[in-house]
Image 1 (cartoon, helix red, strand yellow):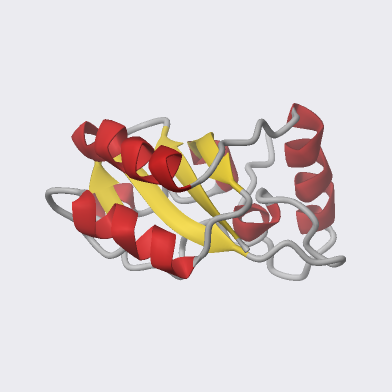
Image 2: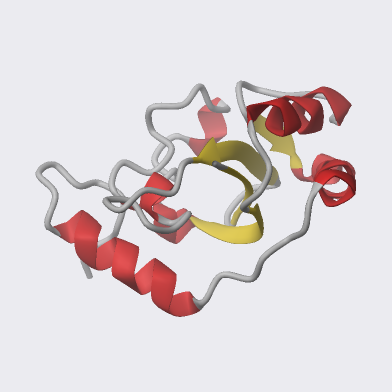
Length: 129
């Protein structure tokens, strides 16, 4: 299990959540590569902007769990589901940093997850140009 923080590339929102690393979903990008965040309660202005290509990974904490994720959500001033205004980013990072170590994630992990997602039926998380 791990806790991630993604930032919208279009609007001032962050998404805090968790992902369980498994043999079938071996990195954090698999969480969002196939369906994006479309299944999550989200601010209306993010509708149509919930794919992996619409977000950047800010932080990944592979040793944190759901309790730590909940602590990060509670520390933020406001929320819309698991989304928070960008102004809460430093607070969320501080909470997670105090509970575990951030781990860098190579760009190749994102590429790997996107290749996997393109093979899935009904993938909506990447843009075809």
